[in-house]
Length: 181
Image (cartoon, rainbow, N blue to C red; front, side, top):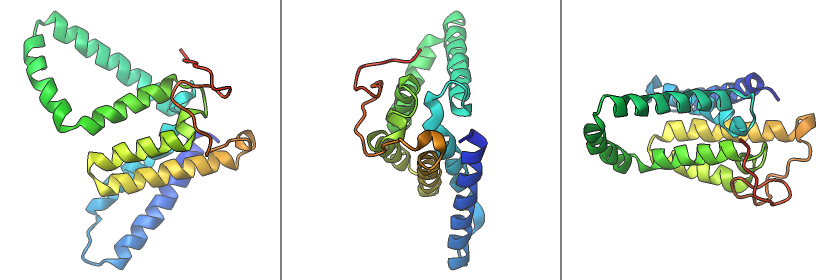
């Protein structure tokens, strides 16, 4: 499936779920809807971070380049001391955000439909997003990610996708260590 098809399925299902929850609880306002839909967008795209031409992969590459440029700028401006004072506090406060970045990197380096499309990688992503702290973001992410896997499973190219197979990051279909550059 193409990314926009995954996105359409994820956003539609998550919106219906969100509206159903909103209609059940009249005291609830729509402030939950933005993180719910944001989580769905991220969850719908993220499993394909291992595919070269996917939106998730392209976005990851752009963010990586911008981050490297910022590190070079910090070094050039000689403000590394101030950054090193702030960075540990940010990482300690948001360690699960750092774990999420590490998981995305491992997913990016893995062959297509291996780590990010298997139960182990899926559960690790769910766990880190849950621990970031916003329940609506987590519900949207889980809905988008799960529907991505289901959509891939029922597409013609994914009919042999075995979700319950155990795959570590950077392992190919023959259980050999394989980093995709």
